[in-house]
Image (cartoon, rainbow, N blue to C red; front, top):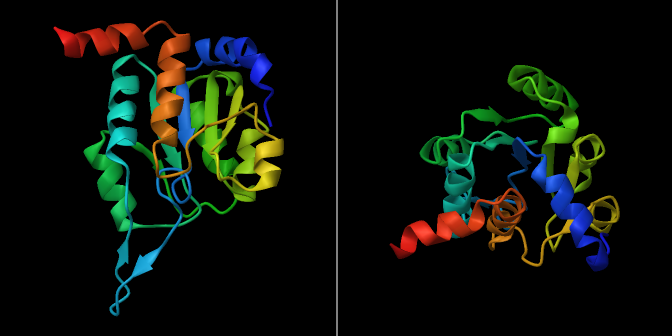
Length: 180
């Protein structure tokens, strides 16, 4: 887990980012899966996370999702947020990561990944900034550069978006735009 005294190093890594990659279950959601009697899946997404993603994208940072599961609900939510880089059904996320980096023409160090479970470790070990949500598996926290104070599905992604915007000098401008 990241040392709180090392926040300057975290901000320096965040300054270089051009891509934020998110896991879904346990990061954009609280990790709970709900199914009705017909097998329809339901997920709950945090509105603050969604708005943070929209603000971050306005600064020029791309956002992508790589998930081990497939879900129509996820596809619909990502579409509503304007996220076009959506990779679902990748239990081994390395292939999706390599394709995404190549498609965007960026170096792995220019990407951050937010994860919560061991499926995320292969990407976290390759990016410039590895982030764990507060309620992540202990192994994920141990391999993260930084850990959010909020849990997955409860504003952790917004916290990450704000950190990146702060590091890149955009956060104050984004907030000021709502005050005028």
